Length: 392
Image 1: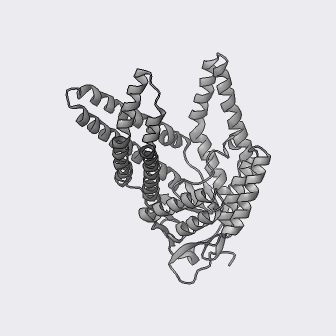
Image 2: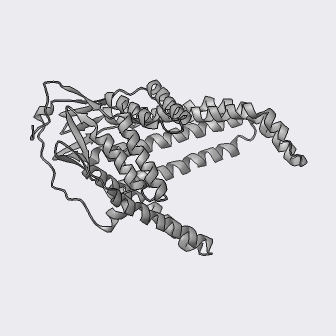
Image 3: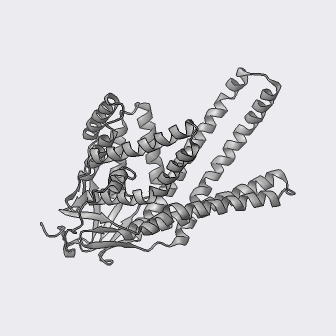
């Protein structure tokens, strides 16, 4: 029992979540009260307490995960980042924009390194059956895939859109707008797809469990197509919102030009404006669910451990996630947040039940790695940058 993850001959193992809404409600209530009393200072400890409860109630084949991160470590990171941000704004506001923007630029340029350090901390603070996880990857690759690639792709996308604007001035206005918008949306999907594919490779190939390495091979084409579909899902919502709001917007512009303030006009169209807000947030939920499901399934279904002896599988569906997100938001809203803990536990339990580990866990040697937790300045500044592993 101490040297292996106990199995019963079952080659397919589900994650099981046993968290209870009432227990999580007490944690959230205490976190909320202490955060209010301390004017937000307690927030890092609140994050850790919530995450520790979820980890410790998550089991794989009867074994609980252990999470040993501390709020103090994350607080130091939050504090240092806040000090740098406030100092930057202060320099800009006090006629020293060069120093202010230089600090912001250095902070942005350092984000990939800080993300790596943060993921290293989160991984090494997590263990299963006495064996710790770990994470390590190339700093250059992190900077390239997290910063350089998305920036370059975004600039290319904007350049293509700008050139199309210049080259299609002879086309009818509505057709021109629709075509350019479509190209821009597809370009966004391509940007997201390539960036996320590189992120998956970086995160998947950088992780390890004890002496065993994780590995992943992501089909970039599938990732790009999935992201384009996710962005295109938003298109019908945008079209309907534009159709509803365009007459109101044009009328308001005319009233503004004439210098006439007509509050009755706003009241007359209040229902249409509310409908636009409703469609907007619904679209965000649908697109977010589609993107999350696509990336999660791509990541987990291509992830292996110990040279392919252990494989992972995610069976989360878009429609299942959409209506769960809707219920979480709706129930939490009508109960003024009091129902959120129960809805959160329900959502996590569903995600866990659709996450599987395939392989002979009995044959997996459980030997902890020898890597020690880094304690240098870079680690202290970085620990709060990313408090979770993406795509999981």
